[in-house]
Length: 85
Image (cartoon, rainbow, N blue to C red; front, top):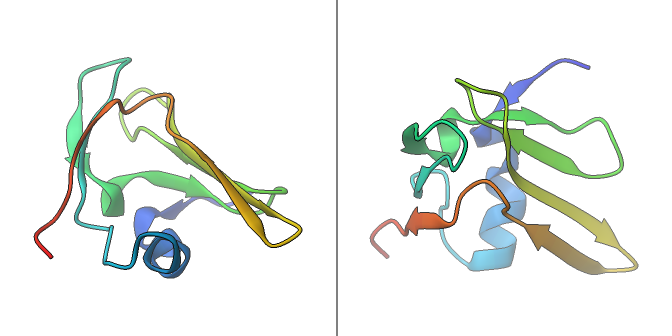
């Protein structure tokens, strides 16, 4: 499984949130790293998408689509900063 960067999720995230989310800021709950979605390490070859922290490999964000419905969980990033609209 080859990792990508957070830009690989740009299309789906835009569809879900109606804006470019690659510039959304976050803080990793595991190591404290701050960054933007575009910098996350992303794996898309499984049944869903998993985004991990570049420094500590903690799971930051997961999303999957099933029967036309998206499920999103962000266990590793309780603090987010939305980009300007």
